Image 1 (tube, rainbow, N blue to C red):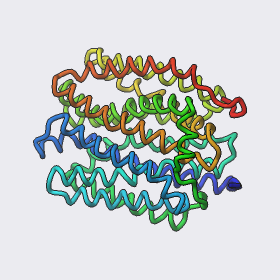
Image 2 (cartoon, one colour):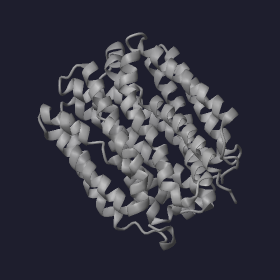
Image 3 (tube, rainbow, N blue to C red):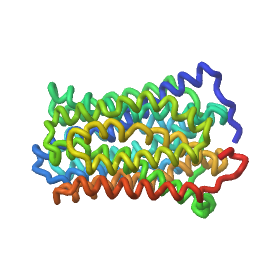
Amino acid sequence: MTVVPLARKAQLFLLGFLTTIFFFNFLARLALAPLLPVIEKDLGLGHAGAGSFFTMIALGYAIGLFASGYLTSKLTFRQTIALSAVAIGCGFFLIAASRSLWAIRIGLFLAGIPAGIYLPSGITTITSSISPAHWGKAIAIHELAPSLAYMATPLIVEGLLIFFPWQGVLALIGGVSLFMGLSFLRFGRGGDFRGEAPTPGNIRLLIVKPAFWIMVVLFSLAIAFSMGLYSMMTLYLVAERGIDRGLANTLVGLSRLPVLIIAPLSGWVSDRFGPKPTMRVALLFSGITTILLGVLPDRWMIAMLFLQPILMVCFFPAGFTVLSRIVPAGSRNLSVSLTLLISSLIGGGLIPIALGLFGDEGAFNLAFVIIGIVILLSVFLISGLKVRESSGI
């Protein structure tokens, strides 16, 4: 496969478009987090039951990641990106119209599938449209979307709750996602080629690489840190720290504001110092701050809430750069999708349930400490990450 990078202006347009689509993809997956106190009260759920919502999303997301390889062997990456956004919108309409707990869970599962379809196609479209020397910076711009979503979601949801019930909030988010998908199908550039469908052969070539399994572990912990903890953070502040829901959502949203300053620099850091040192520092800092978030008293805990997410944003451009370099260009979507399939189930699915179970026992703090310790220990794995010398890692 030979793909010619786009012209500079087209690259910027593509990055802006994909970053916006990724923002709404993430917004859809995060929207339940600030809504949990309202949904718990409305449906009479416990913390573990509320955490199970994220497991349903994660299960669908994992299936979407796996299916994306087959889908992109039939559709172009651009068509797949558009389909993902449109289907997320339809899934959220279904959730908003649901009248039972299991209907909501099924809707979340169905919405998670197209959410998982997006990222392998998005990363492949970026790396095929931009020269390798600028991958770190390009992916860092793309990674502004999660950073913005983490900050904006609690504020957007809290503002919309003034005017709409929680079902209306989800329907509105779904409508915007549907609009973005149709717009990209009409006006988007790049990604006009197909990928390789997963086969026993190319899956085997990937899973025999030690680098792949190391990245699975590291991504699992990074997702547990960024999405797993975030998913339950508002509930933690309200239920265990006694903070008002509106203030808790505001604090969680504003705590992501410093990340927006770091995120644009993260790609430059990865390109300048290399992915391995970047990942090592991000995990060390994040593990320490997660432990402190669990043990500090309220006043210092709030300060730590703002420090905790600052450097993990640097992990993802470095991590995706590694995943893109350990395989040929045609298999990058498979490398990303298989890694995220496993890591999203662990970090985005099992961790919220585990946090909820600890929370039901009044031990949210202990869960934070345990996760922080595991993140710290994972740093030792990076020394064993062997990638071809020509990749520059």
